[in-house]
Image 1 (spheres, chains in turn red, brown):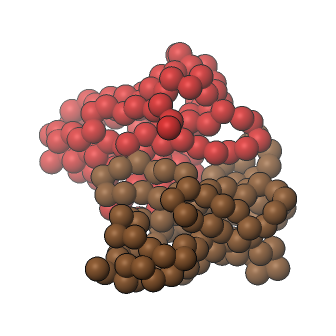
Image 2 (spheres, one colour; image 1 turned 45 degrees about the horizontal axis):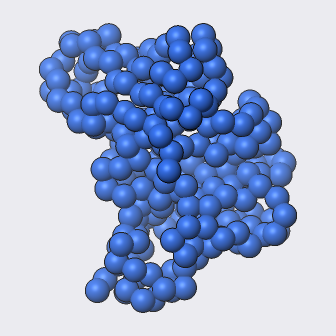
Image 3 (spheres, each protein chain N blue to C red; image 1 turned 90 degrees about the vertical axis):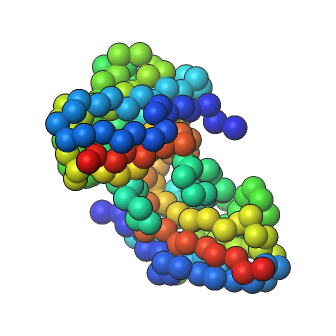
Length: 113
Length: 114
């Protein structure tokens, strides 16, 4: 059982608000990821990190930003939420450099009104 | 560029019937292949993975998948489906170096009839 947590699980917020989605893992994994998933659709990688102080953009362009100050923590921030940001955000982590088995958190469902 | 195709968006099977979910991939070298399952409102759980060796891979919950290089496929199977298997299933492909990320297919939603 993977130990990766996301909070909040559900968030409803108004346009223009700043939000931070939290992701923490207790497995000591170096690599962490953020995916965006619209209902019934595939996952799109929006950010990833190789380790502390490393952040990279993924395949899908996103207005969000991430930080990696501690190994276990990889928060995602939207400075000004918009309805187009409504989606599910999944956080994941992996241990090894070459075997990309990723362990996923339960996700955060975001609704921007 | 790597890609994954899951041709079936929805599949409905009767409880107790056999199941096969299709996955075709495109990748320039030896792929790492994964099947994940996602229950409603949940994250993804790894069912099984193929890195090398035996092309028939056993996973959790009675699932198995077979890697067929000649067909670029990695189909997921289960001999007898249970109602609790109703979920969304994602196939993913990754590479064998540190820079390669996972690419996910569009998913197949499985419904199970009683």
